Length: 143
Image (cartoon, rainbow, N blue to C red; front, side, top):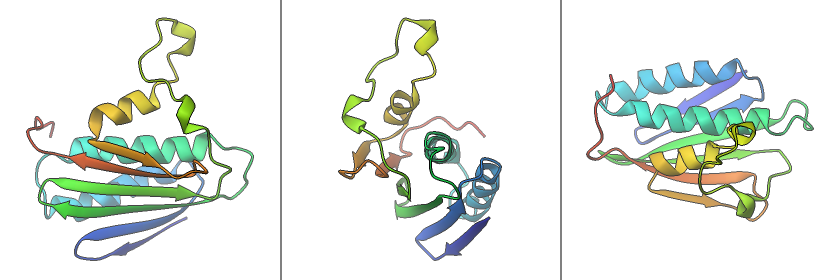
């Protein structure tokens, strides 16, 4: 289940932890923001997908976990994404900062990916809330 609250400068999604809801959130986000921003939404949508996927997949211990994702328009080229879930959090200080040369560890690349697409990443102490700033300036148009 997904519920959305739209305002002029933000969208707030409350989501149950079901993997099939991610695409619904991306479609709703694209529809809402395409009115304001014709170009450069691809990076923003990739960041949202990665955050939701990791939140839902990485904490199977919590059943029916709720995830809150807020997308805030800072200005014409910047967005702040705040994602918080009811999970136990994780130790963000142990995140891999570069790709491993071992193919068996290639799946551990989420933070590297997010870091490449964002201008700032912050975690709360518990590790169940992340705030990411995505600046769309000088990006190629993928659409």
